[in-house]
Length: 339
Image (cartoon, rainbow, N blue to C red; front, side, top):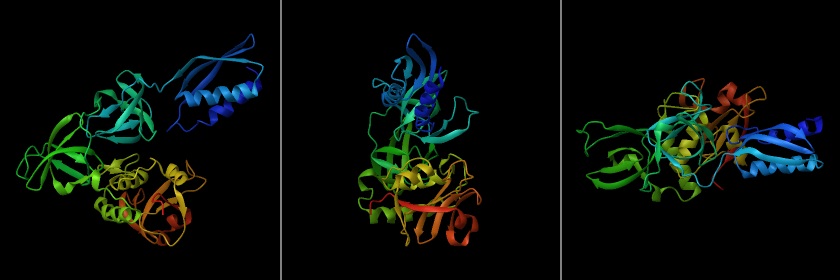
């Protein structure tokens, strides 16, 4: 392969280098008789088209053959549902691989590739990873009606605290309510026996905030309920949570979908300036970090911030201006509330 072809391929593959949301493993296996033979795998048709278009523009003297390139996303594959309370979204197949995130019961995953008992999947927000296939099943036939808003809700086989504990349901889990009795609601959820939860542990999807002000109020009301939840890299629940997982969960409970990681949120949000309002997001980082933006927290108003802090090992409130490492690494604020 000549240097021009090598450089052209490296340039276009580099556009899809973020493995959290992209797959672009394309290589040239042969250059012969005026043809470039490609192999490997890409996430979707859009990725392959970008690769071929760039190569065609920079190497017009060659005919491109991409028949050996696998396209992972296929329209005929049904989505699968997480059928355990929570499970890891790993960086490679196997429980010893580090999770990049976690997924809650009922979340829908698009299967892309199998490796033994593991599936490479795509979340609805585009995040990619490997999940243990036996923890997945068909999507529930009943659409969810509520979100669990209690950090850890105790599921009981009968309405009332005198009944035993059937399971634990984590905040952010979408469930379907089927009946109610004396302040309790019966739920069904994906792949697991249903049961009863206190009605105040559930938030109807129909009642999620409809205005920016209502959303800010809901965020501030929910945030302290997770105080003291320990820091866990890639965590998204009250069993352990990281900075972006915490912010993403708070916004999910208010009906707003955010990107998974802090740098993604920073790129997607609307820049805002002081005076900061409750619900605005603060971002931190430096050029020496693994990514420029490496931390996020939520303003409670002004510089008061609640966040999942690795240095404090959990969810706590800090004044950004009073903590040197926060003050020195502050990179800006963003809003997702459209005002």
